[in-house]
Image 1 (spheres, rainbow, N blue to C red):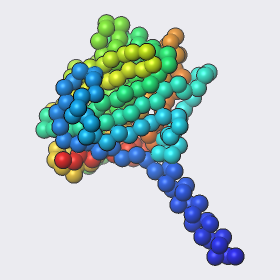
Image 2: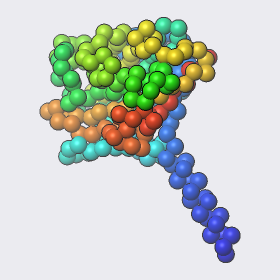
Image 3: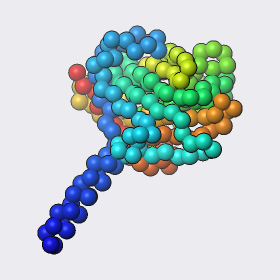
Image 4: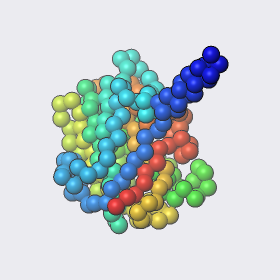
Length: 231
């Protein structure tokens, strides 16, 4: 009986550990055209899916911010070459809100945020980027806002498409800006895209994270997921 109980406990712990495992992002080698369209080159990039159906299974966390709950999910792909780190996000959203203006933080819109610490050897709390990226804006173009290292709007190669039921974002993060420790196959560093959902009136509804620490993990790179460059 004791052996059965012990085995049962081990099984429960193993299942729990698997349920809380964070996803790992794999960046494959290639150079996409930045147009907001899922080109053929992206088909080789592994997909990390983050939805209300699976976020618990991959260790994600959801932070409610308003009535109605979370209404979005997304698929993320990552790629790299000698010039850039690339991200393609395909986001489902039932009530698009894209009222951002240049020169202002656009946190109360539907967008993705991307946390990157290109050189993990840098002291904790230093050398981190957090990019807010919106697929369109009041001026009719995608916008990028960086919160920590380069506060304000930044000019990155980016394209965004909005449509009924969601949006896409395709963006290149130049290594020249990120200043990684190294750019080569096998290099890994803290990385984590997540989704912000807002109502059509610009009221924040919630976050959907690929890590279990919620919005408290945004400022802690130890909580983030990891991306690995491969060829």
